[in-house]
Structures are given as structure tokens and as C-alpha cells.
Amino acid sequence: MPFMGQVTCDDFFSGQAAALAGGTTMHIDFASDGSLAAGFKTYQARASKSCMDYGFHMIVTSWNDNVASDMEMLVKDQGKAANAFLKLLSTLIYACFWQYEHKFS
Image 1 (cartoon, rainbow, N blue to C red):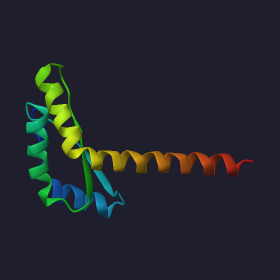
Image 2: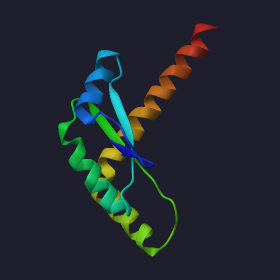
Image 3: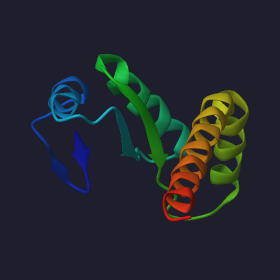
């Protein structure tokens, strides 16, 4: 997997298989390949070998009309999955705080 001029020996499958063996159940990768749209498509193709849940953290290095257009397209086309993940995350955070508060009361 390439990142910042370096390339790891793992791909989505081998890295995720190792992570699963250690108990990790979700992988969020930093995705960049020029534009946001190109990065998403490139990393979506790489993730075809995935063996666990995954998401992409899209890298925005500057702001212009192309970035805004790509972001709008990604939110409209891929937003349901992102929204579902954020809802799950907020539910887990709430559950953790609820348990913490009730443990000491």
C-alpha cells in the first residue's frame, strides 16, 4: 500500500488478515490519489481484496472547485455508508459514557 512516497509489503487482504488475528475488526485507510474522486476509486479497487469492514479517510490537501465538486459527488453517491458508520460510532460513544457514568453512581 503506498503512502507518502513509501510502499508497504501488505495489501488490503494481508494487512487486514493480520489485524483480524489481533482482534481489530475495522480498517480506516488514508486515501489519496490526486483528486478525491480518483483516490476513492483507486482505494475502492484496492479494497476489493478486503476481508473485514473498511472505510476511507479522504485526504484534502487544498480547496478549490474540483475538490468541492468531488466532495459533493462522494457525499451524494457514498454518503449512506458514511452516515451509517457515523451513527454507529455515536451510539458506541454514548454507550461507553453511559456505562462509565453508571459504574460510579
